[in-house]
Amino acid sequence: MASALRYEYTVETEDLAKTYVMGPVSVKALDGISVKIRRGEYLSIMGPSGSGKTTFFNMVGGLDRPTRGKVYIDEVDIAKLDAYELAWLRARKIGYIFQTFNLIPVLTAMENVSLPMIFAGVGREERLKRARELLERVGLGNRLDHKPSELSGGQQQRVAIARALANNPVIVLADEPTGNLDLHTGLDIINLLKTLNTEKGVTIITATHDLKMIDVSDRIFWIRDGKLERIETRAQVSARAEE
Amino acid sequence: MKMSKEKQEITFPLSEAISFAVESIRRRFSRALITVISIVLGIAFLSALLTITRIVSALSGGLSQTSQGPPLYQIWMAAIALLVCGVGIINSMLMSVTERYKEIGTLKTLGAEEIHILELFLIEGALMGLIGGIVGAFGGWLVAFIMYYVQSSSPQLVLQASLSSIDIVGISIVLSVILSLVSSMVPAYMASKLNPVEALRYEV
Image (cartoon, rainbow over the protein chains, first blue to last red):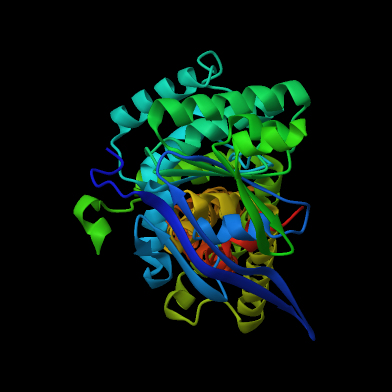
């Protein structure tokens, strides 16, 4: 449904760089990152604060434009998209999950999950049905009509996950999804993301410094000072940990 | 483009936009109430002024029926009342935009286009203008009528004149909606132009 076409690489970046100019100072947030991310992969981008994780997330998500280099989503260069096509991409191809959940406070859980489907032009009946299914899937079947303020942090993040999946995206981008959650709730969210990754075959890219994420990741990109330090598989990380 | 094969439109039906705007107003009721009250006062003033002018001209024997309408200083007063009212709406909508940076950023990541954000804030402004306009226009008209009805020696004439100036109520309501729409334009435009990354990074 999300895509009849299959590409080996869902995301590709070429020499991706972003420089922020603040008065006389220019800061290289990203400095030439070239990676390929496979369809269905669970990928973690790790690195200390300020290493450029979030900047990378924003570039790949089409939320910000790079200073140099290219981002391809399903082999389409997103720099070439106009505002309308970019909105279309955000609505249908990419689901976003944020550290601060970012649910719309005036809407209920059901309405929050329905929102991306409104933009994608899904009919009302179908919308409500899918929103209910998704919320049940993330374990909130009994919280459909609650507003975000009436839900705990973990529950809000579950709503956000359901919302990210609403239009059957190819990619789910999660920026510090466990950053505002306690250890146990964070683990629940990580496991939920992994299950959905396996079940639906959706590519998951998380920017995080939560080491719990390593256990479910297929590959880990270590980023430091805007550069790609190394790429490791989960096995390599645990082998290194045992040394 | 490869995407075109599966391409469907990005939409935001008016009905959805309206219910979203209504929900936003309900959730931020006290803020909306203050804005609406300022609209009510401005519009009530205008509506009362116009109605009184009609009543007075009717009482003076219809002689000045064809004459110039309200005196200049009254027009000035009404204009200033409307101006204050408009500035109040701009202020309130700007605060509403600032308060909702994150929400706007989120909507954009979900696929909202600039026009959708613009639509949302304009509808919100127009709705508040409509509510404030209805209350204010009727209120002002009623006050003018009662004031003259009670003290006049020919209440029948006052009643007649008031009833025949019910069109003023309609005019005032339309004016109120237009005023609110115009005042909401700048804040709505600002909201629609927000870059999602900056909007999301913003902390209130």
